[in-house]
Length: 264
Image (cartoon, rainbow, N blue to C red; front, side, top):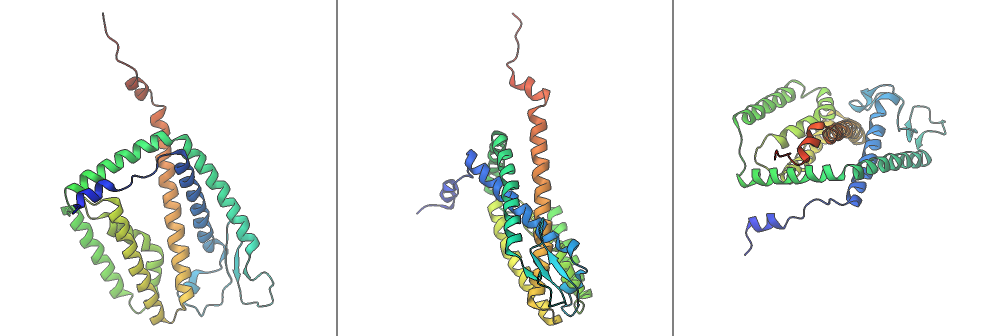
């Protein structure tokens, strides 16, 4: 019977071909434009109060670069509702940005492949040691639980708790996934997925107790989580590419790659 170690060895490594990097760049561009579309809600909408109180009469809309959705009190406005033509424009814009990211991925594929190899090797070594909590990890976990508990107790009967879930949800999920040490990144993804479902379920239940319509709660999670996650992922990716570009042009790297000279 195969052991867990055998299953770990059989795991398929991430793709490293130019096509893989172009596809990742394409998906990254589409996700970035999706995040911008979600974040545009805060610029195009009169007030976010409707996310925690469905009885507010405000005009809401979102879309980047074109407006794809509009909801307002004036029912005679022909522009209200979902605009499929604008959605197509935004999709084409996202594909064009994704093509640019894909070209950048192909340009730096060798450095990215090295990063993947180092990352997989590091995670494999950590996983072989077993899961563990450090003193700092336990302190962070205790602090996180204390903050969440105090927030729930203080705002249990007020709609502010929904705002905490909308705008602090990604940070809470990331903290829960990153605190354990010695865990492979795939296991962290599982933790993120389970915690995400649980937090969304909590938001839906709490919204129902406050009388906030379900579509308002889901809209708040979409515009809050998607915009934050997409923008921060984009910033991290840009920082990584800049770091690799600087390393490739560094004189120290050129000197290290050249064979050492000998005195005869």
